[in-house]
Image: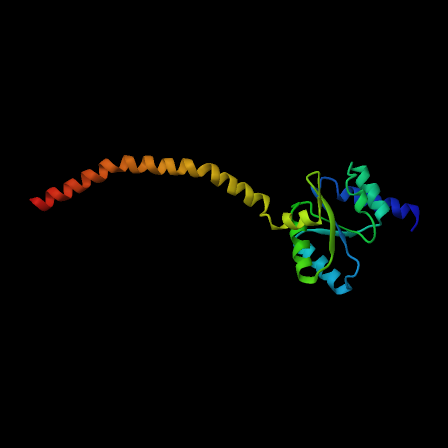
Amino acid sequence: MSTPQKEQILRETSERITGVRGLYLADLSGMTVASVSLLRKRCREQQVQVRVVKNTLLKRAFNQRGIRELDDFLVGPTGLVYSALNEMAPAKLLSDFVKEFEKPRVKAAIVDGRLFDAGAIAKLATLPSREVLLSQLLSTFIAPMTQFLAAVDATLRLPATMADVLEREKQKAS
């Protein structure tokens, strides 16, 4: 590959990973063409990108963005998996694909600036999405207030309910 082509790939890769909060490295070796095609199809459906780039070019692109933690994992065949929309989508997608086909082997990931190994990525894949976690947290904060308001409401309704019961009893007695 000539130097202008390498520079073009480096520039494109560097632009694509700009602003991405989750970068995953996977070893795609040993996969059949059909399984790689299926992986790419599932990735497209969830707006996840899969790119196979030479390790040296990938390392240079990462280093341009200040990412040096993945340098040790850029050995052997490497596929870059990422999503500009959801940093957890690649983890779930890769984890599900590995359960189904036993490949690809996930090497490592950087999510929000933190390095994760293959075991940690499998645990990340089991977590609910960020939106679900935020809604769960919000419901935890709101629950005591909701219970308090229900108790106040019941207390305020009690005199009206008692008056209604007394009115009915008077009508029965007459």
